Length: 336
Image (tube, rainbow, N blue to C red; front, top):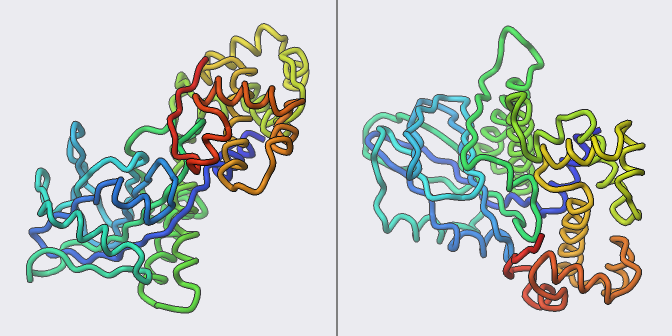
């Protein structure tokens, strides 16, 4: 049941894959990510977060980011930079790319996908990889992004000992991405965009499965049988006039035990979580621009526009009318 809450959040944050690079690299080489502020407006105008991922399809390379030790990657590995931080892929650790390459890479966004690039010298190919960028909403409330580490690395190499395992599923995504990048068939751009989203979701599921038993946070709450069920109930009926007593009965725990368990794992009490989630739904409706304030208030469980406006300003830091005017690209001065 908890997986439904994950799907709910993924839908609400407008996860959108729109760019796909197919890169052939010859050593020595280095490829540096373009700045987030250059890419985001071209991928999803108004979005506040950029997710970058790289799938190594042949050879090997290194990935590095400021403050993080270089990581060796091999064919089949997938590395995701969940906040779009500046990073480098290279043939050897510690290398940097030409700073002017940042602007030229960003300028390529918008061309027909996949965008083919050859980098490095004239020597033999040392690595091939595909790079994708996803944009999504980080404001006003994105419990998934708030709880992901800045870097996630997983292996998509087939597991011969466990056919049908998660690694095999990810390997299938990798093979499909390679096939689509090699054959420019009709609808290829849409397929590549959807593959980007599917690969990211699979990486998140793999990360969720790998969490330590003592781990706290929203993802750990999803995995907990009681808190996960509570999250599912809240997401299924966000407009319902929930009380902690009713929620406790729904999951089979007393009011006090559920409140403590939920706050320990998720980081906020259940009713505050519900209020924040309602504001995320409202923000999406405001950004879409086709619903009245009264309709939005009713959709998320407020009896009047005034009550909704007060709650939105308190939790988001600005009135809903200001959020709508700015397309959601505003401050997130949430108040607890």
